[in-house]
Every structure is written in structure tokens, then in C-alpha cells.
Figure 1 (cartoon, one colour):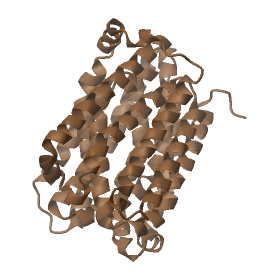
Figure 2: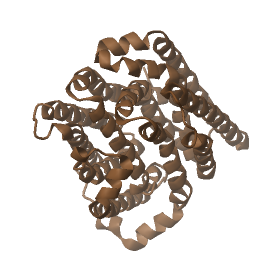
Figure 3: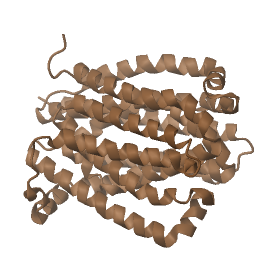
Figure 4: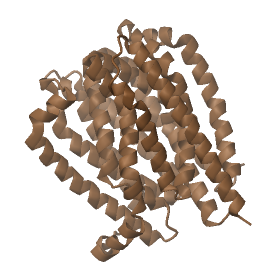
Length: 421
């Protein structure tokens, strides 16, 4: 039997829900890959990468702080601040798309038939931002089961919508985008309901003086996280944008499948582990208890999961991709072999980064993210004859950055433990 609030129990609850939620889109991929073309998925991947970049600024990173205060009122004020920020940036995004539509289409190399997706993008980002903010409140309140249910609801709506719209010829080109929008909307509604079921929102949570107070108190989050997080997101987006710039949109589509499959362990497990670890480590830090034991326990657990995954990809990726998704997608399996080590290290190390958040080492976290983006800048100026060489170079640089991150995390966790008498 697990203890009521044990780390392992909470991880199990979140991971179970996340696995169920992620099984849905993964199970649907063999169907979707036969209903939509590599070009469709290439444009959709650029859309999602752009969404990820916008998401960084929508809540000004105050959503991350919801889990930190001991005082719940302060946590709700931070939630309100994040919500207001998300709506403001949504309005700015809509106006920007309306005014600069031709320039944005040219910059993102969107084929003309997909331009309506640009107007869906701000709304999808809004709902995803709102969900993320409310989800931090669920994690703070240890409502891990509710958080898991929300993920399942989102993926079910997203997948069924995408498949259904693929048979509607007039809007088939937007099926992937509309499915994402509706999925994020359901994501938000579910999280909101689970957060405030039976609870009346107090108008004091939108009082300007109170919002200014918490914004100032946690100002280090936007100050030291927005630009580094933009660069961090840009690091992953670069994989798609550089392939688009140096090769073509179809190759981006093949890479979308590669990234989706390699991200399965992180989507299934690592994200949930990171959320539970954030809550647990924050609790230990607030109570002035040592954290290295919990950290090393999670590190060994994730390593044990990562090793078999790497072996399977290296040995069997090409035939698996061909069998599961069709002959056209075999090349995605080949690409996965070049990137699997990088993704495996991300799976193991990324959840541990929550330790730096709990210790409020925002500057250290920021410096690492900036540094990681800097090391891939040469890839923007080097022309590769083959996409294989580009992927190998990207993977090596990313892997080195993750190993350095691990050293930083372990150093600061041990430093905190040593400071406790």
C-alpha cells in the first residue's frame, strides 16, 4: 500500500491518466497518417511549433508560480493574473494576424489554402494557456486524478474531430487544426470545472492592487523565464523551421511523425513525473527537508525506462514505422534513429528541472536555456546536403546540453541539502 500522499502514488495517478490520454492520439496516428498527407502534417507541425512559442508569453510565466505560495489566496491571485494576461495576448495576436496576414504566411511558408489556420491559432493558444494555468492549481491542491481526467477528455475530442473532419471535403484541410482547437477548449473547460466545482470565484481575485502585489513579488518569473523559455521553445522549433527553410514542407511532415513517436515517453510519463516532483520538492523545501533522495529515486526510475526505448528505436524503428503508418512514412523511422539519444536524455532530465523551480533558481534555469539555444545557432548558417547530417548535428548538440543540465540540477540539490542543519 502506498502512503496517502507518497510521491510514487501521485506519480502513478498522473502517469496512468497521461498514458490513457496519450494512447488515444498515438493509436489514431496510423489512421490519421493515411487520411492526411505529409504536407498537411508539415503545415500542422509549423502551426503547433508557433503555438508553443506564443504559449510562452501568453501567461507571462506567472502560471508556474501558482503551485509555489503557501497561501492559497495568493495562488489564486497568480492564477487570475495569468488568465488576464492570456486574454490580453490573445487580442494582440488576433489583431497582428489580421494586419500582417501576408507577411506571416510568407514567414511561415504557409500554403495559401491553409491561411484560415492562422486565425484559429490565437484561440487555440488561449485555451491551452488557460488549461495549463488551472492545471497548476490542480497540482497544487493534489488533485492528480482530476488532472489526469482532463488530459483524456482533451485527446478524445481532438482525435475524433480530426478523423471526422477528414471526410468533409470542404474543410478537410483544416481538420487537424480544428481538432486541436476543440481539444484545447475541452481541456480548459474540464480543468476549470475540476478547479472550481462548488466554489464561487471571489471578485477580490481581480483587484488591481492585489494583482500588482503578487506580480511584483513573483516578478522574477517573467524577468528570468520568458526570454530563456522562448529560446528553449525555439530550440525545439528550430528542428522544424530549419528543415522547412533548407528542405521542404513534406520533410517537415515526415519529421513531425518522428518527433511525435520519440516524444511518447515524455508525453506518457515525464511530464506527469515533473508535475508531481514539483509539488513534492516544493513541499520538502518549504519544510526545510532534504530533497536529493527523492530526486535520485526519480532519476533512476526514468533511466530504467529510457534504456529499453532507445534499444527498440535503434534496432526496429524503420520496419515499425513502415508497418504502422504505411510505406510513405518509412523515412520517419530512419530519422528517429538519429534523434533517439537526444529525446531519451530529455525524457530523463527534463522532469528533474522542476527542482530548480522549487528552489526558485530562476536565473540558473534561464542561463542554461539561453546557452542551449546559443549552441545551435551555427546550424542556421550551415548548409547541409543531406537532412541526415543536420539531424545528427542537432542531436549531438542537444544531448550535450542535457548532460550539462543534469550536472547543474544535482549540484543545486546537493547544495540545498548541505545547507540544512
